[in-house]
Amino acid sequence: MVENFLSLRSISVRFDHLNVLIGPNASGKSNVVKALEFVSRFIREGINAINNLFRERDFASITFLGQGGNIKFELKFDGAKYALQMSLGSLREEVYSNEKLIFRRDSLPEREQLSYLTTNNAWKSVSSYQHQTIVGKISIPLLQIAKLDGCADLRNIVKVLSSIYTYSFDPEVIRSKSPIRAIPRLGRRGSNLARVVLHYYLENRALFNELEDVFKMLIPDVKEIVPVLREDYVWIAFREKYSDMLIDPEFLSDGSLRILALLVSLFDESSVVAYEEPENFVHPHLLESIVDIMKKFGKIVIITTHSPYLLDYVEPKDVILVTKINGETKLRRLVDTDEINVVKKYLEEGGTLGEAWFSGLMGEV
Image (cartoon, rainbow, N blue to C red; front, side, top):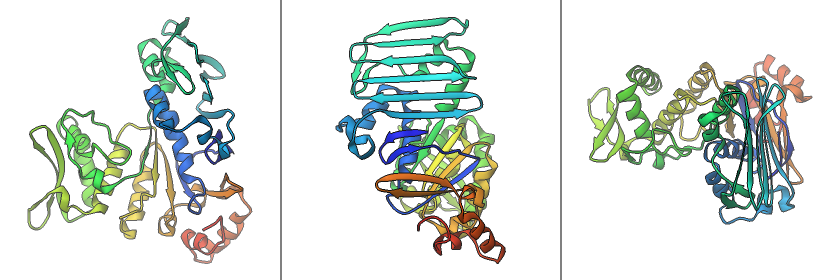
């Protein structure tokens, strides 16, 4: 559930194993991804996520139609609930396990109050006077608190929430060199890809081999993926199957780089991954295989797309229709709408889901 954040005045959506958001440009698909990204970053980074969200903007500018008021986020899964509420000058963050409160943060202009259940199942309360932000004083992130001495339920819930990652891959960022000393974590636009691949190559060769095999299945002209080390940097190169040439990053295709970054993001330990238009630069014939690969991983996958070709390889239950009415983003699962009967009939007559959308039988194009 999200309230009063950008174009999301009030939305509630159930995410299943695969979720494909379709709708016109500027309908608010990316804002759904932004909401997930902010919540997970705040849990991991605390004040850095707040500063990144606001930068030089005032509080009202990220609320619905700039009207101000409270912004609310709420995520539920497996008996757990995470709630975050922000207003100008204050913030409240809460975690529940089976409806039992196990963590609370109250941030005000003058102080911050933390209360949580520790490893000994005893309540601990801490009052601090930390970094001032637009939404009150913020100290250490929830992830760090949970790791220090949070109870088992808190640690498990935070582990899931902090492993939500969103991606909008940029080939020029993907092909850039990575510092050897960088943390092996793939960036939102694909930065650090070479460092992550090197990490797998040196420290988890079985996973690297599996990643390489899947990549070569999709791009059969590649013989091997080669992390190239020079001084303090590493970059990705491919060895060609027929000429045995090593192709440096500046000559690698945008599509191949995006596919490699997508595979790396699926192979990591994330609980939820969200992709903005993953079909860009990728040949339509590969989309079926990519969707099949996404379905095989035990995580929630969220996709925003404008591609009728990609839709051809998903099922009606996977589709979420996104529209904007008077500035407000609305989300509806296709199977919960009146359009589903028309779409099912169209599919039975030999049409495809992508054709149904392009023809205007569901949602807005």
